[in-house]
Image (cartoon, rainbow, N blue to C red; front, top):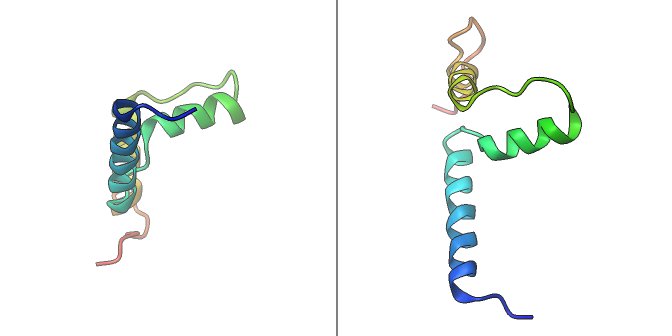
Length: 71
């Protein structure tokens, strides 16, 4: 069954956005939520804002850790 053009374009754009976020070091929130629901059922899930702050702190080492970026 062929995929309709609007559906294909929508999926392609979502994949491009996800790739761009990963390239700049920001994992996808939806992927995080899906992982937490599957691998850690019943445990709390961070809000988007908390997820963003935690990922930025991890990337730039603001919590006393090593800076994990290339330049």
